[in-house]
Image 1 (cartoon, protein in one colour):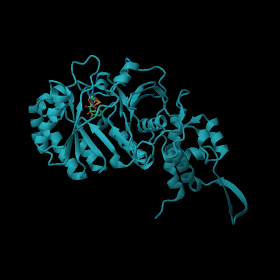
Image 2 (cartoon, helix red, strand yellow):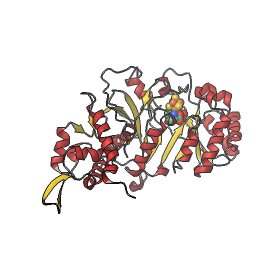
Image 3 (cartoon, helix red, strand yellow):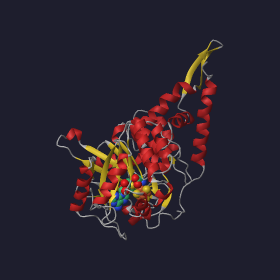
Image 4 (tube, helix red, strand yellow):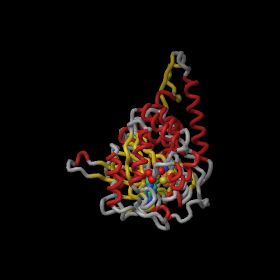
Length: 417
Ligand SMILES: C[S@@+](CC[C@H](N)C(=O)[O-])C[C@H]1O[C@@H](n2cnc3c(N)ncnc32)[C@H](O)[C@@H]1O
Ligand code: SF4
């Protein structure tokens, strides 16, 4: 039996109370539409009194005006949601499809779309653009737009490399993000708005998303999955056009596999054996290589999606022919559902690691191919624009771990639905 109207409206009322509570928590709190879920946007519409519904009854033939929650909620909330995500409206003044009075009511109450501003952007000669976004607590995150121009303009790609955390707690020895420390997880809308910022910068829709920016996506899996859903459902980016990259966090690959996404899982290996891996990836101590490879094999079996193994080549450390051969042996455990992506190291300041010579990279490729492993070498894009992940952020925010006094208390953990 269908639930009575008032029962169905109750969760929405709770959502409104919690949205209003977080909105009114502090004077410094921005009333941000970006990050409110569709039910919360519906409640917001009601809250602003635009939804009066004329109703007459036999008992009271003279028509009276009363709230009729369900008649308007889904319509108005969905409209706001579509304006923010599908139409990419940056400000309430652009909400052309809603009544002027409602726009004014929202503006009057202090609401705004509230995308994070671009703090700094650098563009490399190949068009790759790295953007620093300033979050509401003044922390900076990196996001990168990577254009690939095909001759046929209609099919040109724009890849967004998005961050999932402010910094990263896993501290891989070669990574600038790890060296900068960890501050917090990103909320779903903070991941989504990175793509919106790239689209705004390039004046072009993003076609591909890789979760390969700052942070470890598997340590913030709920937000990553919410953002993934929003990319797919609202921004219309195909699941197959998205890649989630991880260095490996116990139990999370299984969890991801259970969602049966049609996206690529990229696993950052960097070494063909446990001993060497632990020197490069300290967190590998708690996730033995055998267990990681088992989880990758199961991911392939459950989703049918090939796993991409990322291998950052560090000169004299993991780039010898013997390493390639050992890697080929290790990959056999994955049962064929894999691909290797070699990333020649992008040097960062203060690191002892070096980028291998081109001929060393080619010898590594040859050794893998001789063992029938499918391999590609990632073209280094934007080398002149602080290419390594986390480098630009570290330049602008010397101490990202500092608690910043002006941090507002807005709890925009409310997810785009
Ligand atoms: C920044 S991480 C983010 C995703 C996840 N934490 C991971 O490690 O897979 C994405 C990829 O960038 C690579 N990477 C990070 N710093 C690099 C550098 N300086 N040179 C080359 N590759 C780098 C990592 O090895 C990883 O494969
Ligand atoms: S490579 Fe990935 S997991 Fe390692 S420190 Fe960098 S962001 Fe974190």
